Image (tube, rainbow, N blue to C red):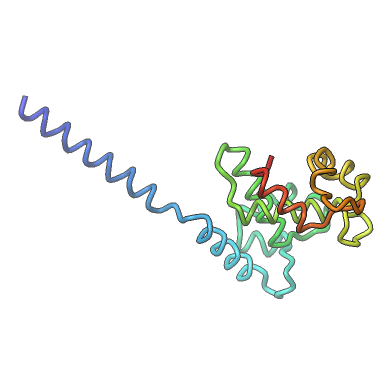
Amino acid sequence: MRTFSFILATLIVAISGTLYASFAQQPDPATRMAQIEQRFKAANKNGDGKLTLEEAKAGMPRVAKNFATIDKDKKGYVTLDEVKAALATMNASSGQQPDPAARMAQIEQRFKAANKNGDGKLTLQEAKAGMPRVAKNFATIDKDKKGYVTLDEVKAAFATMGGH
């Protein structure tokens, strides 16, 4: 019986140590985002802020693996904001709480894509086409009733609504 207890205690300690090590290796969201930014910068050999598939293969293999998904508009490159947005989407789909910085990058990317004329002002029509949740809450977000919302207003609304 003493041998069994000793073996059981040893197993518990070993399992606990393994679990602790796996959790301890997970960086906090801010550190994780800084690591992604560093890796992106290192992989972006010409420093233009645009990561090509070749650069991604050499320096960010997970980005390369998901390149076609991240490069939604098929430009042939991805930006740091697009990589962050993809990370937020992958975290959300896996049930993880998205990193706030990645979530804001995703919102910014979607805002820019929906803002067809590039004036930095999203009309209700543009919101309906590209950001349906913004369109649904347009009257609330457009507090001063000017007929458009800015990126800052959309970000503030998502922060207040908790991304819903």
